[in-house]
Amino acid sequence: MKSLAISFLSGLVFALGLGISGMTRPVKVIGFLDFFGQWDASLALVMIAAVAVYFAAWRISARMGAPLDAREFRIPSRNDIDPRLIGGAAMFGAGWGLAGFCPGPAITSLASGAPAVAVFVAAMAAGMRLHQLLATRRAQAPSVLSPAADA
Amino acid sequence: MHNFTPVSAVLGGVLIGLGAAAMLLFEGRIAGISGIVAGLLKPEKGETGWKAAFVLGLLAGGLLLRAALPGSYDFGIIRPYGVLVAAGLLVGFGTRLANGCTSGHGVCGISRFSPRSIMATLVFIASGAFVVYLVNHLGGAALR
Image 1 (cartoon, each protein chain N blue to C red):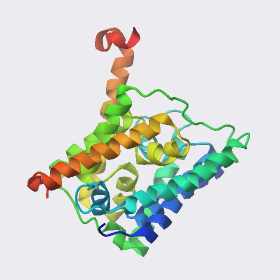
Image 2: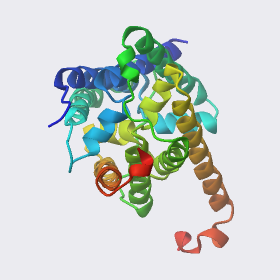
Image 3: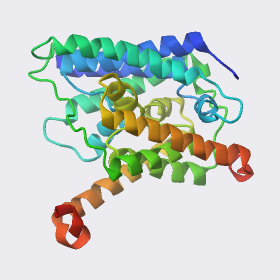
C-alpha cells in the first residue's frame, strides 16, 4: 500500500513538473526543436534541471544497499548501442517533432479533456501494442522472421 | 531566442527530477513513462500496481494543473488528427524499440551516464529537430 502511495505521489509531482515547465505545450516543445528558426531554449533548462536533481539522487542511491521501500534496485544494465536503439529513437523523435508530445506530457494532458490528446495517446498505445505483438512473434519464430539474430 | 521561460523551466525540471528521484530512492525503479505505459498494456505479475499508481498520479497531477495552472494546456500547436495518429504510432512504436523516451533515457539514463541513453537522446532530439525543420521551413503548410 505504501509503495502504491509513493508511486502515485511521484507521478503527481512529475506531472506538475511537466505542466509548470511547459512540456505539456507542443508550441514549447516544437519551439525547442526548431534550432534553425526561432529557437526556444527553455526545454534545455528543463532537462538540465531534472538531470541535476536525478544525478544527485543517483549518487545517493549508490551508497544505499537497497531502496527505502523495496528489496532491490532494478536499474537497466545494458550498455550496447544497437540498431534498434538508434532506429527506435529516430522514430520516436520524428513523432515527437510532428506532434510536440512525448509520452509523459501526453498522458498528463489527457486531464485537459482535449480530444486531440486522446487521439494521440490512443495511437501511441496502438504503436506500443504493435511492437509488443511483433516482438512476441519474433520470439516465437526466430528462425523464420530474423534468421540472422541468432547467429 | 524566442519565448524563453527560464524560471518555470528550471522549477518544472526540478519537480520532474524529484518525482523520478523518489521512484529511484524509495522503490528502486526507473521512472520511464513509455515503459510504464507499455507495461500496463501487457501486464506482468507484480509489476502492474506501481505502474498503474504512477500513471494515476500523472493524471491526478494533470487535473491539478487544469484547476491551478490552466495555461499548462495552452497547447499553441495542435496538428490535424491524421498527423496526430501518425505521430502517436511513431512515438509508441519507437519508444518501445528504443526501450525509453524523454523520461527514461533523457532524464534518468543521462543522469546515470548510460551510453545507450545518451545516444538515444542525441538521436531523438536530432530526429525531432529534422522533422520540425521540414515542417517549418520546407513547406509543411498542410500540417499547420
